[in-house]
Image (tube, rainbow, N blue to C red; front, side):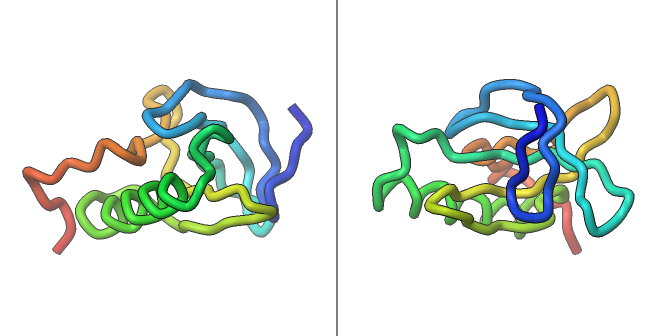
Length: 103
């Protein structure tokens, strides 16, 4: 695709997500492929940004897979572990509240 989001090179769109779109990307600081969940433009008001950020932070606590939550140029996004053949390990907005997988 050729787009960049900070240090991430967007490679392809994977799928729509509950709150936006998910892309496969390469971290230019290392040899790491990640999934990036970007908040949909129609949800980028104050409430949508808050909901996305809080869901991403909750996912980082309650589920393995969320590596980073950030915002660039009014575009909130979450960097998620990517497993070839499986895709992103977490869909922001669908946090597995019923079970905790970390320590």
